[in-house]
Length: 381
Image (cartoon, rainbow, N blue to C red; front, side):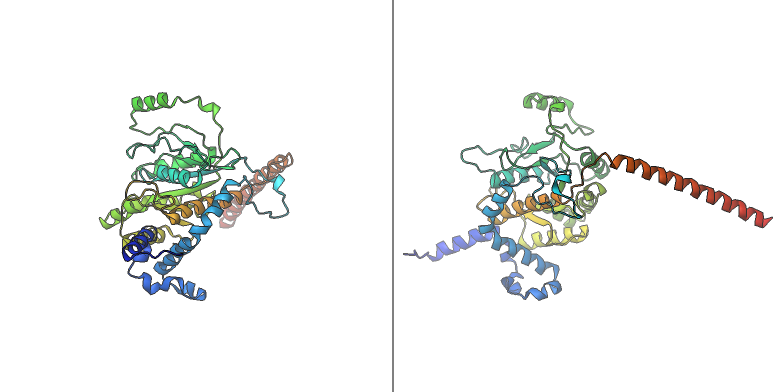
């Protein structure tokens, strides 16, 4: 027999649903007709309505789709999402045994909180205790070392997530140089990230407390995909105060050539460190996407890493849980479709020959330019 809820219980249930479906309290949501618009008219919708539609898509999929995507991530092996092209077999591709996803962003953007959220959503295996990042115990602590995380806590898993140290908004150039080094040279667990002005004594204490081994004993990981993490609340509040520095710095990071090597448009994670109203969340996301030149519905995810009570948003917020999982899934798709063929012994002679031909072509081009100038001088005489 189905129990009837009292009016107060129904109001409480509805309010609990609105915690993670926050956009449904917006003034324009009723005009949106709750996804009853014709699919053919999507291209004519305004950016705000398209965003409503995307948020509703996540809300519809999240309750039943979360377990499915969890299973896909748990069963994932590096290279599973590679698509055969040009007649090249999977065995001929240079696929690493473990795919590496790098989280980048400015200080306080929520990278470590996002990793903790991933552990909470994906890493539940019986009585295994909840794992946190080394900087997750204090809101004021800073990630000094690169941290490798297997967020599904499975030895058979084929991917890991790296938490990196953020920069200040006023030091974008230094940040881009360091990111370029990570993308080109790779990363390894407990890789020390020193910055000008760091307290060396405090860092020395952290090294001793962590009992770090020699860095040579850690496996160097090639970065296969990157996620840009931005604090939408911080950026939006700065915009309201007339400060464009956080938004411009985020654009420089998102558009950096180093990140574009792994994906033309890196995945963008917008975290909410502070409570914002519905209109502020919507306006903040739309302004950031417009300034970065990306679609507001493709590859952009909102995650509330911490609830208003300071707890991790897990099953109480299935939309956030699913959004974080889908972002990981998308990153692995990007990773597997960006692998290159293995180099064979024939490639090196071909490379040498191509360089030799380029040198010969440059030599003859130089000769042509010299004789052309000599010919012009004779005509003038």
